[in-house]
Length: 203
Image 1 (cartoon, rainbow, N blue to C red):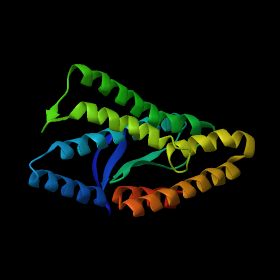
Image 2: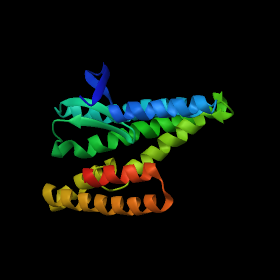
Image 3: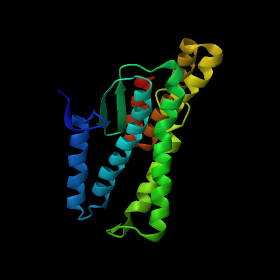
Image 4: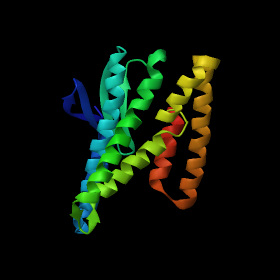
């Protein structure tokens, strides 16, 4: 009801949330008004990268018998909706996405040194490579529900058990979210505020 299905990859539906579509319309509209399509193209390619990131998680998850219901794209990122998270496979599933983004970022960075696409004076591949590497860094912050939080939970669960490890990772996520919310409000950064809310309620 609130998302539109585009196509399937690896038998996994790729869907756009209605808020993503509205945000994309705004980005394209502003790009046209400013006669600069760089940001619109970058936004679209960044979310292609996000799909690849989530497919990395999904590929490994399917190896553990997890059903991937869909990959949903939101204005602040993407999420692979899984029917379960196998405890013995969570570490590998959590690492898979950042590894894909890291590989993509490094590959684009190398390519951009020899060839790049300049749009309105902006290097597309180089900028996209940096955003992918930033995506890796952000996702590896050890706060649930980000990849780093899931990785932390998988590591801690060997010593503290699954339930206690989940609480630890979730509490770290909430504290981080509150810090980001305060910073976002002080700087009037809408994206940071939205991300903080996503992390808090996810935790």
